[in-house]
Length: 380
Image 1 (cartoon, rainbow, N blue to C red):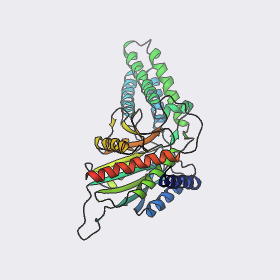
Image 2: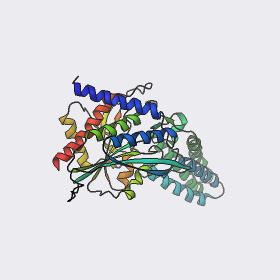
Image 3: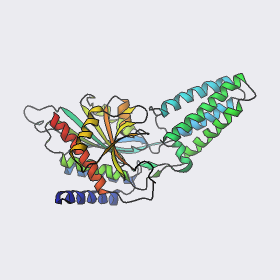
Image 4: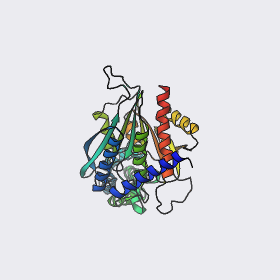
């Protein structure tokens, strides 16, 4: 192995171990997340970036909205006995909400709000602070989660983001809606359809009460490390203004991403977001599509392919994702250009027990990010 590569690997391992030792498990709005925020703040300043922090008021746990949806589906089923028309109207409204939630427009989270924060680092282009300031050609914003990614197990899966969970929630409300419709036409048999839907609605309600768990192998640490090291390596840019944002409570509430947009009025045409998500293990991929409507930006896809082709050590793979990412999806809904980079096991590979984070995987992801920005800088 080349000496420079060995030095880079040791640097990554040191950063990962320091972040794990200092912050530990970083649940959204927890002291661990706040410790990670302070760590990232200091590291970005050490990399020569101007850093600011602002507070977020966010929902501390995800899936709470499905508690409300489950309760309303049960209410619609109960009303069908004596008030089939109001039951149908309620079920139709609920079906519209769940439909939008399932196909790319999630219902805003509900529940008690707690304090989190965003850490925002910026580095102007060379010459921007002179007597005749130079405007950047591009602005690249690197995003990484401050909080630990979460996973849903057992019944709690029904309140999670997987494709199966979304279909089950949609089926629950659809069956209740069909049952309410049938009550107006075939009063004696409506419950044959409505009862299975109400049962799924009850399970959805129970699932929303069950908290998700932190992922056994915390790929969010790897994402933060990738962002920090990429900012260290991307110096002296003349056309690309570099931003690095550690997003608070990213797994529970999209406000961490959405509040960036009015606070920093990014030009959608010349701002490119690179979202770094779970980099725990497996293959480094850049997502060509996320969910049903989340198509990645064409320029970023082209730059990622060019970066991968130019550096055999990157070995990244373009792949669509069944579930939208926490960071890029809110940006796309507001018309911004984004690309998600993360790691996924090979298709069909078993999940297996928790394993230490792979510094070589983080190095590959870092090289991909750095090369994308370098290619953009070279193209001007």
